[in-house]
Length: 288
Ligand code: PDD
Image (tube, rainbow, N blue to C red; front, side, top):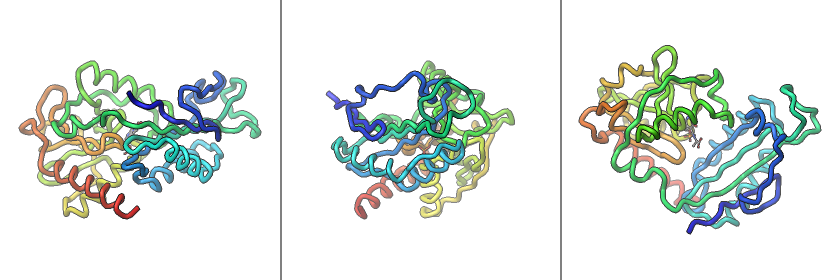
């Protein structure tokens, strides 16, 4: 039996199921808010500074004023009180509760701040990481500021659902220009002739924290990595394909739209980067 996640709602700690939020919350009405997800290993948040840096930038980009240092203190306290060893931290800040008008509410309206810590019973991507997983391609229907980690995730949800209905772990999003931007909730990497390829940072993708780590790990492993996109048509020519994300870590993709990638098994560069990821977690834990 899993424990109910422990939440901190606007400074008050309570079981997640007891949090009550007004229907006038702007996150609920407009998707007017941003969020962050961190992985917890052995009770420690992984890549905390990187996630919180991105959270500050997301807040700045949509002009929500929020005391992130205070949130960090709350996050650490909630994590400690939750006693979660393996799991995730979810943080979300919306522009607050106010009568419904599209323009921002008066400046005395305060943001709504949610944190919760959830322990894993079963590691969500363990099997996909080991065996390799299948994906589909779908058109990227999102807006033009995907670099903001906004709670507006409708296009992502529709894509993820389409993938799930076809028994796949992820939907690869294909931009109007034919390039694969990223997944519905992961970053995407291809391998061609020994070179790792991934979309360059731009407003068309989320600057994935795991993406950033994997680019550093590739460098450390002497694997050449280029921030260059590949197109959906080029997928069939790839030697390897993999996803990265906070909960996914590094997941090999072994088929796309029903066609195998190479011999349909996880490739050596993906396996090397999976090992480097685990080494990086172990190294971080031994230094904490
Ligand atoms: N998703 N791209 C998108 C669209 C994402 O939503 C995510 C993360 C990523 C990977 O980013 P990171 O390595 O920082 O987790 C890429 C989170 C985990 C989620 O929405 O649950």
